[in-house]
Amino acid sequence: MSAALYIGVMSGTSMDGIDAVLADLSSPTPKVLEFTSLELPDSLIQQLLRLQHPSHNELHTSQILAVELAHLYAQACQPWLNSRWADSIRAIGVHGQTIRHEPKQSYTLQLNAPAVIAELCNKDVIADFRSRDIAAGGQGAPLVPIVHQALFAHPHKKRIILNLGGIANISILHPSQPVWGFDTGPANILLDAWIQRHQQLRYDHHGEWAASAQADDELLALLLSEPWLQMAPPKSTGRDLFNLGWLEQKLDLLDRDLSTGEVQATLLAFSAHSVSAAIRQYAPCTEEIIVCGGGAQNLALLKALSQHSGLVVRSTKELGLDPQHIEALAFAWLAYAHVQRIPASLPSVTGAKHARVLGACYPA
Image 1 (spheres, rainbow, N blue to C red):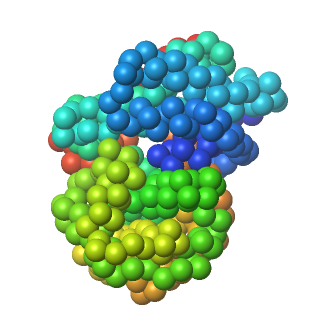
Image 2: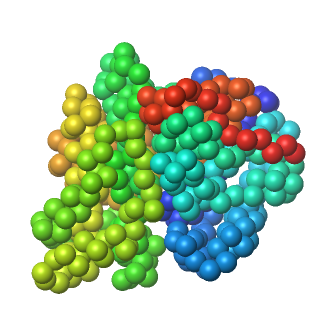
């Protein structure tokens, strides 16, 4: 068995769970051998959401939650550590749970306890991938375009890989041009938060609730007026900006009430419009959009994206990779890049002064 097996573990901004892959990185094209997913307990999600804002005794709380997350990350890895592949697993790449992302203030914070994971798993753990890029003047995000390039670049087609996680980000893969990309704004983050508040569901299945109502043009215009959307890349964002408090401020500007369904429909339109506007402005020659991330299951969002962009929109599944696997696979590859001392940050994407080897190693 090849000694180039890596585990990648990811829990994203949407907080919909922990995804993990066992990947074979012995050839130029990464290969997913197995995938697993764990749901985050509701109590943990609520505590993580509270940490998005300053609160009493938050330093203590954050460390308790980091250790709890580490045990869950290790749990996701355990089946492979007790399998025929165990001796060939070189390292585990663990992103951690982002609770603050402030590149303008020169920091980003992903809750994690990688030393605990190394102890539980008896494997090297690579973590804290974003800080080195930020130290070099970059945004620390998005980090996946270099992996998207390895997986999906086409010699002739001008593609965009669109990751629809909590936040939407694009990787622009045009032949004979350097790969680049950036966050475009919310994907699922507001949609999930709104349905959790009003229907106590974690997400809008296939976008059915949003599709059952009509988007409101006035609210949509208010959402699209957000100054961050007009900023030129490189740029990145998260819950620090796009949260329910931000949405409530926009709703307060309306002189009438909307139904909760109308708000959900408008949030879906907002995600589709902001992605499409970014593509028109910065990658107008794009021929197709390839979608990955949890939002690839939102059929109403994919339909809206196709309508507003005027482009073919399809899932990475049509190219042989499950859209739910991509981000975890990316962090397996970033762990490999760290071990091999391969600079994995792209200045064209993050705005860093130099490409740097990302992550810190916690040895077994």
